[in-house]
Image 1 (cartoon, rainbow, N blue to C red):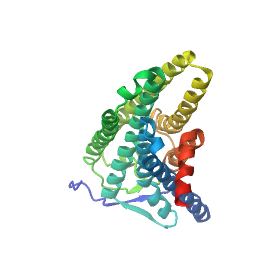
Image 2: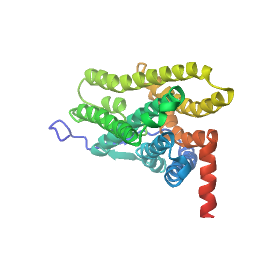
Image 3: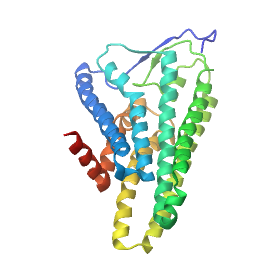
Image 4: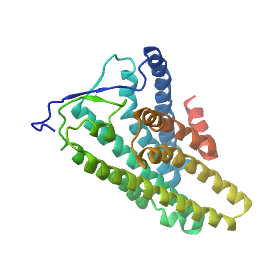
Amino acid sequence: MESSTNNVTELIFTGLFQDPEVQRVCFVVFLLVYLATVVGNGLIVLTVNVSKSLHSPMFFFLSYLSLVEITYSSTVVPKFITDLLAKIKTISLKGCVAQIFFFHFFGVTEIFLLVVMAYDRYVAICKPLHYMNIMSRPLCHVLVTGSWLGGFFHSIIQILITIQLPFCGPNVIDHYFCDLQPLFKLACTDTSVEGVIVLANSGLIALCSFLILVSSYIVILFNLRNHSAEGRRKALSTCASHITVVLLFFGPAIFLYMRPSSTFTEDKLVAVFYTVVTPMLNPIIYTLRNAEVKIAVRRLWGKKN
């Protein structure tokens, strides 16, 4: 990071909006959304770990997904919220690189967890008699560990590319948080090769995972024809939650990564959706559509009161 051509140690964000009044309104709105994200996902983690009725692999993975949502959102949102009240929004270059690392680490871990959850639903619906043998506790731990490691290695590649770039000015980053493409625009060297590598790294993971998810749900829907009406209804209910979360997560990601870079204004508005809004929606989607989670949450609150 301390190369001889690096005389930039601090970066300035342009932020999301320039109007101070709009920023103050956004501060209140996004603070409430962030608190709802932490409380909602934290409640799922607590409920799954405390409730004896939620010890199946599906809920084991759901608790880790909720944990990742909290950490993923926390890499960007607290800094973004406090910046809404600041006249000049600054971050150190090292802080910027750290934010990119953790943002990609937790983001890709979430992608892999969504794939793992789809595999769990596939086994539960297509091989119900062998479900508990296949989805053993050791395998569940291996799949979760693999998801974290996958996110870690993806992030390390992104950072190794970034720390070799020289930054000699300007130091204004056209975004409200640090991401690779806006940062590459500040490097005082041609970053077209690095841009392609980063796009391939992120894009391929997102695209391959999305294709695996779509394929798994096509197989699941095909298999459901042989189930009873009640079995179909129950299976579709749990799958619908997962499919909704997948579409909310991958929709904006595919929009941003699978097209040529354009004005950052629309990019920033799309980024608000997947950094601030989506992590809050996931616990709502899972609890509203899952009777077992709702009953367990009620029981938990009943104990506390």
